[in-house]
Image (cartoon, rainbow, N blue to C red; front, side, top):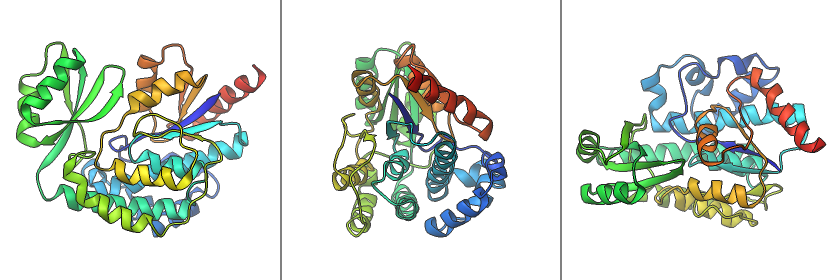
Length: 307
């Protein structure tokens, strides 16, 4: 079983959408996404600098738009060979659209609102996030607790993302747990923590009026790594996830339990396939960073069908 995964915030880089706009219909699709999300995604993905696309209200719709743009290109080339989907953090909204729970227009509208609401919540207190790579997990969690930081992402592969106020993150970097490295992330707030609770209420109100369908593909949730079969529950979990930890480690454990034989990460790709290479050793992965990578993804799907 080959699945597609959709990355989260921090995976964007300046100009990364430029090669995608060379595909037929891509510019028109991205223009429509821009109107739905309330952000000029064409300019953001091709012209704006790193600081500008780091803004939460820009980064989130930009990442989801890129994921859905590359997903459309993949499905046009391969048909419906992907058996399941999962997204990391904001990537869950792309996964909901890919699995048929949300329409693309509703997905872009919701992620535009999500980005703005989380940016507003982040502006209340200066906060951020840092990846803690390596070290003993128990010791890392104890250190975070001592500093008043929250383990916002359990990413697996020996990585936990700490979130909280900037002085505490600076102290963590200055005195990291033994055997661990601390890497500040290019995000503008302590996502998936109590600091985001105001955004949850905003998103919940909007989500209540959105039409949903049950997923047509296997769909995993970040809340606990389980499969979700009901569309409304899937959307409710994504809303609540804004202020609760991402359990990508449990998603990957479930991938192994469910017999996943390959992983394709959609644009802007690289982070999730990197985690899979460490946590799911031997599982083939393809990172679809540009249209040139689509052939490798299609080949992986064909190999799975032939097997």
